[in-house]
View (cartoon, rainbow, N blue to C red):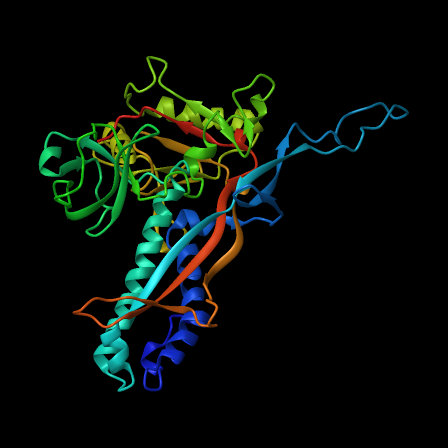
Length: 415
């Protein structure tokens, strides 16, 4: 049954009826689509919620497992029985993160809404779908990130004097976005406004008055004011450093390190993904916890490069089967290999999804203002009537309670 908000059934399309549909139907629709947008997110379950107050808001408390259960063993008939003891648990803490999405109804649209205009209804439906698509695209990008909120990397700053930069991937940038650009942790451009994006060449043009003089190749582009505020993605916990408040790099914390397999010839040096390398990484993933990974994840270029090197008389060696949501995936040793273009380049993840959860403190819902309405007035100008805006938000994070069960094979050549 569809839970899409029925904008065509508004009695005169009054603002109050729009509000009811947004509050009680649209948020459910966005939540449902977010969970079923891609096969990987569909496979990840919601985890139990325990929270405590932190310095920046709610902290999600995760029980982190280490060690092995001790309740099994062999003994003589009259000997001591194995002691019933469970895996050791430590608390880890994740900051819950806010995600936002805003719906706007222009003053002109509101003025004609009382007439039940078909064009108004069609436009509202289109606007709602656009907001939903934008939310899902940004969320998916950050599922594969490291919590910093990075959107793009500058690859060519030669024409910065003319307000033009080239980035590696411009798909998450758009005209009108406000951006901050950083060199490491130092701002190189503040609150600059994107004037246009050429998605074919990845060239981004900024406002004529924007200062890009300090921008250099390798700088990272973020939404203005959002650096470090995104949810934690795969690269947050598929690592060996600090995560959930515990530094895996410290002596004695080897239990809190993911298996990061870099090129022995030098980290950052691309290497071919061969059958032998794939097999050894798959085995390494098992050796750490005695559990096989439940899913492999990469971008298409990594999988295509493997296919190019492992074709047998033009035939793909690995079987293909239909998985969640009707997607088809290559299968390696009974484990689906999912591709997603937001996945980091040059990497192949071997994940155990039972240890990865969405921790949702609050589902998508509209912010209610003091007036009792979800709408607030957005001031127009001499050419426009004031608009009404409604902002929804979600308070959550993506977490992992066993880093050791996750493996990432790095430095892979792409096709």
